[in-house]
Image 1: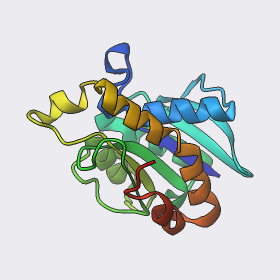
Image 2: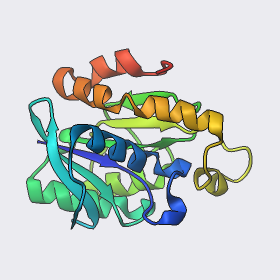
Image 3: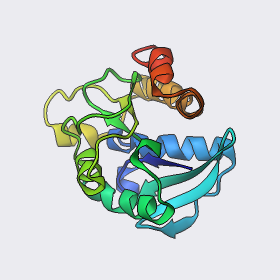
Image 4: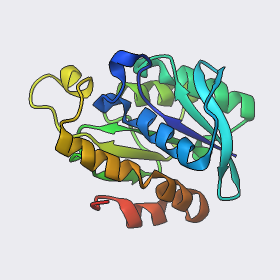
Length: 187
């Protein structure tokens, strides 16, 4: 079983912001897979479905970004999902808009949602899919809580539409294969 987590902030004022790329990816993915995301459980919105033959729990934590680990840990503990089967999808300001970077593990890289997940899971040994949202010109907070212009929105949407393919490769063939197929490529 896999736990697929998209990071973001709850509430209408945060919809479609750079920081909510993880939520957007989960929304797109679950719509494509026909997964009903209506359960309010584990401090998040979740649903169950399959990627290929693998059962997956899809999760959008509702704890606000900096406390995302609370929701992730509750689901992981309840279903006894090991970190290597938890895949986290989130925004990355160090990547150009629309680029994707997949990693098998690693540090939070300054991302507060990831810091909290790593801390509460007591592990950084879980795969992650990062979507580039571009570097801030001024204030980081204003940047990640801001919305995309039309051109950047098109680039991010195009990348997000590859999330099912990315996750399928991670699950079926491993993170290394997904990295070679998708990292730093224009999708």
